[in-house]
Amino acid sequence: MKTVLSGIRPTGDLHLGNYIGALRNFVEMQHQYNCYFFIADFHSLTTHPTPENIQGNVRSVLAQYIACGLDPEKATIYIQSDVPEVIELYLYLNMNAYLGELERCSSFKEKIRQHPDNVNAGLLTYPTLMAADILIHKANFVPVGKDQEQHLEMARTFGNRFNRMYGEDYFPEPQAFNFGKELVKIPALNGAGKMGKSEGESSTIFLTDTPKQIEKKVKRAVTDAGPTEPNSPMSEPIANLFQLMNVVSEPDTIVFFKEKYNDCSIRYGDLKKQLAEDMIAFVNPIREKIEAVMADEKNLNRVAEMGKEKAKASAGKTIREVRELIGFKPY
Ligand code: TRP
Image 1 (cartoon, protein in one colour):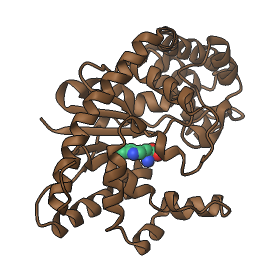
Image 2: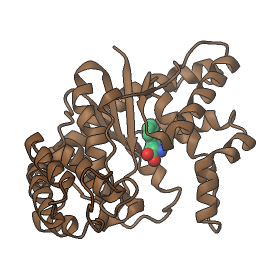
Image 3: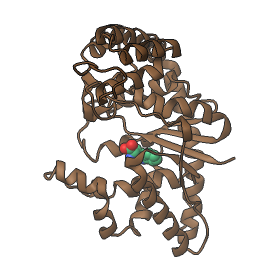
Image 4: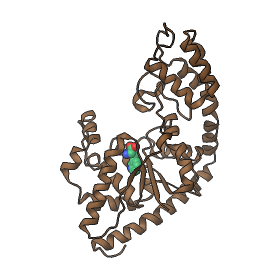
């Protein structure tokens, strides 16, 4: 069985974009692949070296994973810092990661532009840590968005370089996992861009949002002045609202509002009211599940412990083998 691995930094609550773009698909994948889903808490130190509530944030993301249907019995769901073996692999990979290639990485360039006062070595070697995450379980596939493609490419480079250097075809080449036609973009509510942190919290529907919060956000979504000619093309903000409807509403509802748009009788207030209602119906069961999972602290601890055991078994095996390949005495 092929191995799939995915990581997420615990920088905030998960949103509809995370659910549709990734989590919903992970639920299916855990039956077909040997899956590792982990929370990259070490990675968050690269930009937040003194985290305020790292354990709380990690716990929320873990609970949200479980609530979305990730099954700790099937997949290995773990917290990166529970598996310090990854740091040892990070060290070995860093010995063969060159300053030039790390400096050329676009996420690094972007980060030093944003935070010129905190250009630390952890930030520079972010791609090596990510490569260690992937290679430590010998992952075959990594579901990644466009923004992570270069990191994945670097993981391939580091894995191949290790194999060459120590003369064994040890690490498989991790490939991007494509959900194919399942790939649906979830737009933000501000008329432009993708849902997520960068477009702001008021433009993003979090899985933890209450009906009131959803209603308020949808009500304030950006629109335009309205169609003035029949069958006129949609502006981006309006197309985005329909795109969200595609995710949460019934086909009949969508047809109904499209017709109203096309004959210019649409009232955006009605469209938003319907969208809010359908959005609430979609998110509410997930939010309730998150609350239930969060409330059962004992179970959440058990889940984390189970993930840790499974991840450590796999990571420990790799580290033993890697030590042997390099020539160290066994661990
Ligand atoms: N860099 C990823 C992100 O910001 C998070 C991440 C860390 C990751 N390690 C990983 C993703 C390994 C996939 C595989 O989204």
